[in-house]
Image 1 (cartoon, chains in turn yellow, red):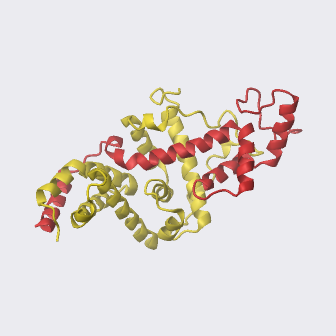
Image 2 (cartoon, each protein chain N blue to C red):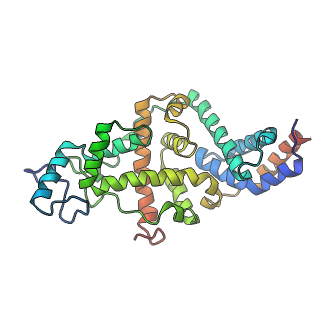
Image 3 (cartoon, each protein chain N blue to C red):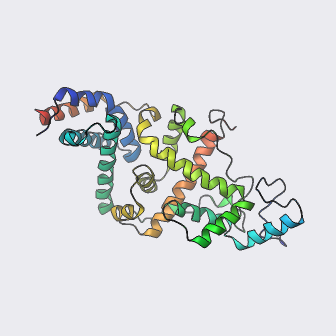
Length: 196
Length: 117
């Protein structure tokens, strides 16, 4: 038996619907799937309201439910799609290293400033982050976001997507290389990012 | 540089140890030869985000960082990305201006109303 009234539930949709939808869209790309996930999130929130208890903000609580829904979505997808398809994993960053394996010093990582605490207040940073995430190949993005955004332990990511440990390491490595490169180019090396 | 294929220290290398004098040159060569090359080190660093490295590899990593500020930065940036990625969901509404359609909003409200009364 739910203890929440329809006005409160409707207010959730107005207050948090957009944030949840935009997050879901970054994760799954398809608007109709993102809308379904948001709906399932609110329905689960209504059903589980008694367990909320106000220990975190409403937003964090709802985001937490959405993360679980997204993981469930990928679990289902993992049963239907092969996540071990490695064709997009060619070494795109080989030019970063000289033939003997050291960094090409002109192309190695630059210093990143400011500190994370400072960039977190900058909407532009999150826009760049979203753009960079959306440039990752779909399966690599799924693996990376599940691991780094949803905090799913690596063993569980393997189980959810039916991939081996070694596939996981390769996919995470490629995702981190690509995301690092994109953030550096589009944020940290620009005047907005502050180190240009 | 065919006679020194493992030289990781160009002129102006800002790392702690660079080839600034004869003994640093010796150390840089020694460390460069006995620790993983950067291409391999970045893979190891990525893996270390998910499982602890064995002690010997942790020592090799520390030694490698002495001669390579780029790998050291790379590791710092992996943590930077983890921290910010973790915070991303709470900032998703700032990250995009894609509208949440009125139709979807109203449909969800109707479904919720059915489930609350």
